[in-house]
Amino acid sequence: MTSGKNPQAPWLEAAQQFQQNLIHQWSQAAKSFPGAATMPGKDAVDPFAAMRAFLPKGTGGPGAFGMPDMGAGLPGINDLFNQAAGEQVKFDPAKLLEIQNTYFTEATQLMSQGLDAKPTGDRRFAGEAWASNPMASFSAASYLLNARTLMAMAEAVEGDAKQRTRVRFAVQQWIDASSPSNFLAFNADAQKKAIDSQGESIAKGVANMLHDMKQGHVSMTDESVFEVGKNVATTEGAVVFENELFQLIEYKPLTAKVYERPFLLVPPCINKFYILDLQPANSLIRYCAEQGHRTFVVSWRNPDESMGDKTWDDYIEDAVIEAIGVTRDITGAKTINALGFCVGGTMLSNALAVLAARGEEPVNSATFLTTLIDFTDTGILDVFIDENFVKMRERQYAKGGLMPGRDLATTFSFLRPNDLVWNYVVGNYLKGESPPPFDLLYWNSDATNLPGPYCAWYLRETYLENKLVKPGKAVVCGEKIDFRKVKIPVYLYGSREDHIVPIGGAYASTQVFPGKKRFVMGASGHIAGVINPPAANKRSHWIGPANKFPADVNEWIESATEHKGSWWTDWAAWLKPLGGKQIAAPKTYGKGKSYVAIEPAPGRYVKAKA
Image 1 (cartoon, rainbow, N blue to C red):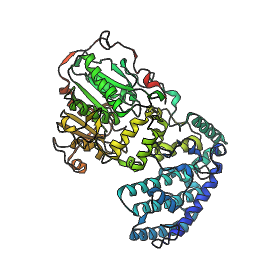
Image 2 (cartoon, rainbow, N blue to C red):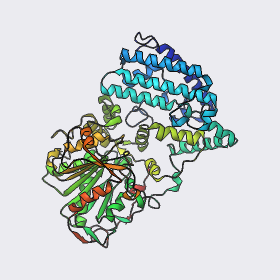
Image 3 (cartoon, helix red, strand yellow):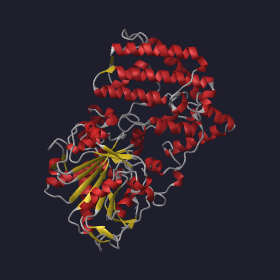
Image 4 (tube, rainbow, N blue to C red):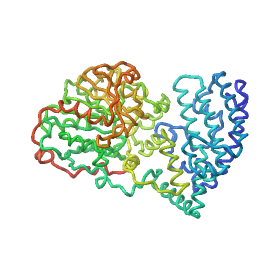
């Protein structure tokens, strides 16, 4: 595709001119952006200047997985598509002709409406101020027309699935970032608030921006309201073991008797464990204790430079397998039940496979929540992973080092930029609002670092080469991984709208484990679907016919039955008979002098900042 002269689409020249006119307007509008003159960068009118301060620098782009650099300015139509694809893209001529006709029809309608044009169907422009401001309303309607056209072009790209997905992702990033709602000169709501407050909202917006620049990330909530151990992560317990990788927390029993088999939770190490213990009303940890399980949780250390050489093997051998062993030692149980969440589930699965290769089976059952083991369907994250990118990370971490938590947080936020980035840019900076206190968003902003070698191994062995499900191909802790040897009962959960672990990716584990299994799909996304206590009486979950797991997740979904409310009760009923007999609950933490209470839960590891 050559700039403005593609014989397949002569209309692009007119479309590009229309686009560039809007870009010029928006670039000029950026002069009015609160604090624009103080933003880094060569040009203060760069419409992405406000975000550039928060985007990590480095050869991988602003995101940990190499997201397109939105801080580099606004590309033209041709550059946008070609940069996203990594090569010259090709289009279906018939689809381009259809797009052309649709574009000119809608553009003609828009021009005939003039200042009477109204943006519809987009919550960013739903406020009364947009409807009463003709210029702002026309700008929004023009933007939506361009956005629809660009996305239609993205859908018309010919190529392999990964190339097409990359183009769609990059174009969507550009569309979301260039919305007129993101600029004070075009945001009618922000302008009205500035007038009504006599400029106070602008002053507050500048103050908010300077605050966020100092802390290094966009504020999603009032973080000053929360304190770990005080009003989040408050379930009573004690740290009973620690090494350089993790602390093991034992929680106070909430029943007179407990099951003889203890329960160990392995959360992801890419964020902090207290997503499982935000508040008493939605704490999965507390719920486990209330069901009569003697509950233990791994609390990961937030790595510093001294841990920059830690590998995937270190985390499996010296953390997950160690935690399993310590839990057994403290309780005296021959076997335990375990749960892994997200990457914690991937690590738990590896630990079980390593132990099975050694002829050991210390875990009686395993629960995997939104976990990838088969990395065939990895959703949008797949757009970042290719051989060149993984080699770059391997070279970067060849001698150790850390992947900063800020990089990870930025990448995951830009998977849903309107909800997790631009929404707060508009509210915090353009409108001068302070985001309300929200424990989940506080946790989301509490970033964790990761050892570079750990990340490099994970990217190649899982996302790039998908070795875990190829018997004998992946070697972990000196053992060849073969899940055919992991024959214990497993409970598998996936969230229907999960953008990090797609439902197909979570379901794929049903084809991996040979033993008895149960798969349940919950409504909502990666976090909200999991943290859904029964008392809230929210959402639904779906259960399929017993012992029937077709290869295609869509076939399973068609056969599944919807049940109102939380999946927690189904899981608790599944786990109950696996707990063994009930015994008197312990009155102290740990075990004698071997495992004494080191400090109260949630411990100091979880309080360390990235």
